[in-house]
Image (cartoon, rainbow, N blue to C red):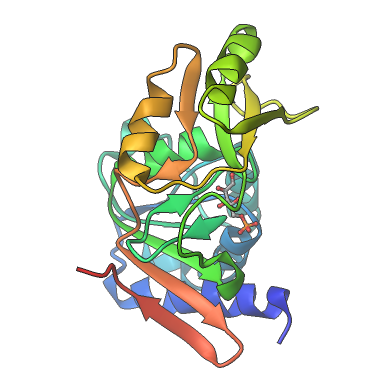
Length: 225
Ligand SMILES: O=C[C@H](O)[C@H](O)[C@H](O)COP(=O)(O)O
């Protein structure tokens, strides 16, 4: 089974998980990336069962509209029933690293506004300790050098993502060579650096459930207690 086939399978599994819980007036949150795109494609078959979606990026909004799903502004949508999105890494507590596609800030906002976060990944995203994937940080452009110096002092190696401007008009620094042993504290610490908009750790709002695609099928993973 190829990675693309695993992404399609987990996109379909997420639709299977929520289909019977959709309601006519319900608005759901939809994430960004290649796995989220597979979810959107599978969701199209249910478009008459719910009102529409809030998108975590301009790219997702466009894809939702293409398959006939109405896109709502979060400010007029209220609380969302579900948020379905991919991730770049997840650990046993369902903490995530996200933002490989530069959509982390809007993703974090939509996740925060959602009652249940269903994360969809293939098995390559599972790690014991977060940090193998460089941690994306969205930064106000004028603060780029200042924030990079603060991050370097943490023993991380910040790398400017050349040519990437987020949907919010900001830049991304990817921090390499981290071993994130306390994701909740690290998320808060990075967010306290002046000039940081947000970082790609989802630890203070982790996923509620991870659907992980493997060649043998899709596993449902809940956090270890
Ligand atoms: O900014 C992008 C998002 O956080 C994505 O959810 C993440 O990068 C995973 O993307 P993919 O499903 O393409 O691996």
